Length: 275
Image 1 (cartoon, rainbow, N blue to C red):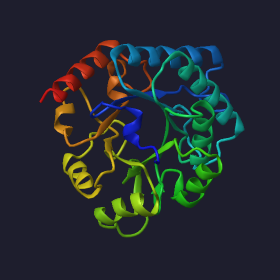
Image 2: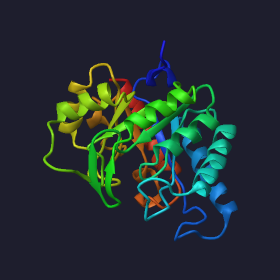
Image 3: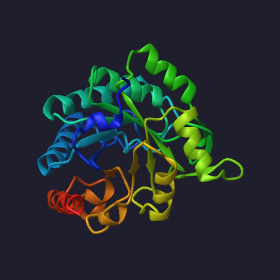
Image 4: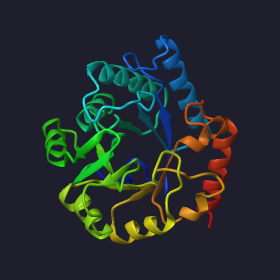
């Protein structure tokens, strides 16, 4: 039987995934010159999330602005693989990989290397169709990605794909949401879907979440931006949550993860589970 997203969190309803936003890596315009500080920051954030009881983590090279569409260079893959392996070594949690902006082949390779048999998933910002973004036009790489996953024998690496991804607009006339969902799941073969607001940290539209959830059938639908401890209960229709910006100190995405915010978030999650 083909593994599913639910296999990552057996017995857990609406898992919480904490973001590990990497500081600028070597080669990036804002790199600070101290690789040891990057490692320390990633492990500190992962520990804060893990001690609060989250169910998974996702590593993303958020500090590497401006992003390439794909192919940021082998050094990015090397650094992210090294850091992902460190996280996996210290924390027994499923780990997601997102290589910005849409370097899905790199993300799959990293995930297969550090999660060779289980516990791995990737986020794909544009899996099907084409989007107009701040990196230019990004075309969906579903055909290549699914074949590469098969070649690597990595069917255990789940693919979470965005619907109407943030920081992007449709190329041409918008398609009906039902068609986007259907194509992403049944032609792009995504294992799950992500719904977000229009930009990093912006609240996800509750009505859009409900509409995607209604069209997705048995596929899981996660909320990918804008959730807070105060608003989490509004997203009861979601099958999981990816939390990033709000969980940082002062709510700033470039700050470390805030212990008290994360504790409050998980208290709100437990309240939602008890409904």
